[in-house]
Length: 72
Image (cartoon, rainbow, N blue to C red; front, side, top):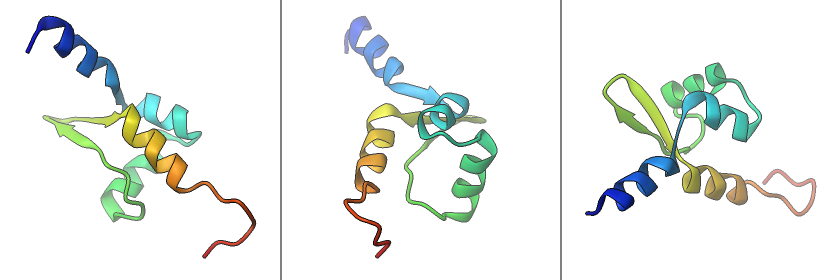
């Protein structure tokens, strides 16, 4: 793996605050979702740090997109 590949992969990871901003939620909400398993939103645990992949956040949002008001 080259240095550039490592840099590119690191840029894809965002911290909890940035993930919350992208999802228009609070970091506390994301923490609750992780601990309760309420939503299947993938995350990485690196030591004490929680990170999210931008691609996972985008895929999660896309999956939750609705064409009408039905919630089922």
